[in-house]
Structures are given as structure tokens and as C-alpha cells.
Image 1: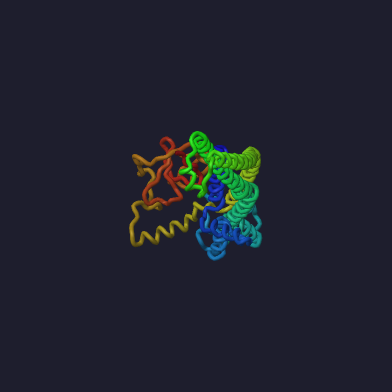
Image 2: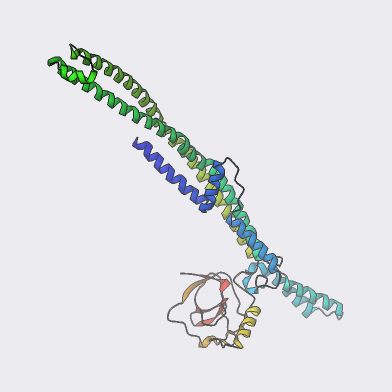
Length: 398
């Protein structure tokens, strides 16, 4: 009995919590419950990830070109993506402009146009490329989530619900019936016990005054009446005992079926784990693909430096910022007492001017920020060297 009760209690808790995991929205769960009770098919519901992906793609279409999603900084590209372009540009510059002695203006214009195209070539289309790519990935994640929810409902939730609403209800009904038969058996035993006590008392000293009010008749022998009552009580007791034994056997067989229920639930649990593993594997694959796509996109955190300086310049007309990044003198910048962090350099970086610090891949440097400085840059220190470094080339360490 205790094992069956334990199985029921924990199965119910696991079932409820799995429902919450698959559908956190209680209103949606109630709606699905009502559709199920009305024996009607619930309408398909879009997942939150799919809705987010749709919003991102719609936003990209409405934003169009000319937004920060379209602006990019050359420093936001990993060097591997632009190395081939750099080689082509260098080749044209050295061969086409320096060594070529062709006086034809047409040739010069053609070479200049080719260099211009190489300089302005972008890895993928404009018009909200980042939002479109991330939105499409979110929609794929949402589709994988919906498939996982459907598979889990079929392979895991349905067997648990069938046990709670089918097998356990049958067990509960038979146990209740067994309890009622046990009470009837106790009543029969009590009746027989009282009849035997009355029979013994009547056999010792018959009391006609006692039997007259009960039977409304006079009897010469009270013990004969009680003997008949004992026989009836024994017959009723035998019948009640047979019914109780039969019901006890039925209940015992049902309770023994709990073991097979555990085996079935274990199989369902394995299927749930497989479905969950497949879902997370799909998510991991989609996110890896998204990272590859974003690697060919302008980095979302590296906006066009021209755009940043323009915004900063327009704001400084009314309010003077604490530090002007255009006139920032690196040698005068002092490291704060707190707030410095270590950073690992991801790619080689050549300083564009004396205010920047050249970087080598895999080296560790100390970085910190300066009030009023562009958020895309940090001040980096390596020994006695100091200069600005782009954030996108760093991996900040704790």
C-alpha cells in the first residue's frame, strides 16, 4: 500500500512539474486542459522563440538600411575574413598604381574602381542582416522546441497521465471497496460475538422478561432463539469473509502491477531524455550556425566609429564630456585603483595611430575604461606600453 501511495504521489509531482517545464504559461495549460475535456483539438500555439524571431525579422524589414544594424567597423571583422581582401588591395596598389606606367586614364579609372569595390565589399547583404540572421535562428529554435514539446507529451506525459487517470483510479476504487468490505466483515464479527454472548447467558438462566420486549412473544426457551441468531450471524460472516478475500486478491494483483508500472515509466523516462537530448543538440547546432553567420556579419557590439564620433560631437555642442576621445592623451591616463581587468587577445591588431596599442593573439593585457570614452574601446596596458584597444579583439577574463 505504501509503495503504491508513494508511486502515485511522486508520479503526480513529476507530471505537474513536467507540464510546467513544457508550458510555463498557466493560462495556456488551462486552455489545453479545457480543450482536452471537451474532446476538441487545441489550436497550434506559436512558441515564444518563434514569436521573438518573427519580431526580429519584422523589425529588420521596417528598419531598413541606414540604422546601427547596418553600420560596421572594419575592426569588428575577424582578420581571416578580410585578409584576402587586403591582399587583393595591396596587389592592386603596388602593381596597378605604383609599377604600371600605362598613361591611359581608362585603365587608371578601372583599377581605382576595382580597389573601391574591394574596400567596400561586405560579407553579406545589408538591410538588417544581423536581425534577420538572429531572428531566423530563433524561429528554428522555436520549431525545435515545439517538436520537443510534442514528443515529450506523447512519450512521457501521456503515459503518466494514463496511470494517474486510469490505473490509479482503478486501484483507488478497488481499495475503497476493500475497505468497505473490511468494515462489513468487522460488523459481522461483532454481531456474531454478541449473539454468542447472549446465547450463553440465556442457556445459564433464561429470562422471559428480557426476551418479551424484544420479540413481542413469549418463549419457553430463550437459548433456542439465540442459537438461531448465532447460525444466521455465522452465515453472514462466512459470506462477508468470502467477499473480502476475493476483493483482497483483486487489490493485491493491482498493487503488484505497480512494478510493471515502474518499468513502463522507466522506458518513458528514457524516451523523454532522448527527446530532450535531441532538442538540446538541435539548439546547439543552430547556435553554432548562428555564430558562424555572425562571424561574417558586422559585430553587433562594434558600431561604426564615424557614427559614434558624430553622435558624440553633436552631444558635446551642449554638454562637455569628461574626456574627449578625439583629443585623449593616452600618456596622461592613469589606471583606476579598482576596475582593472585582465583580457586575452583573440586576434592580432596593428595600431592605426600612436594612441592605440598593437596586439598579438593569445597574449594577456590589463584593460580598464575611462569616463566618457567610446564603449567600443578600452585602455590597454602591457608593461610600460599603453594605448586604446578595440573591445571586439579581446576576451575579458574574471
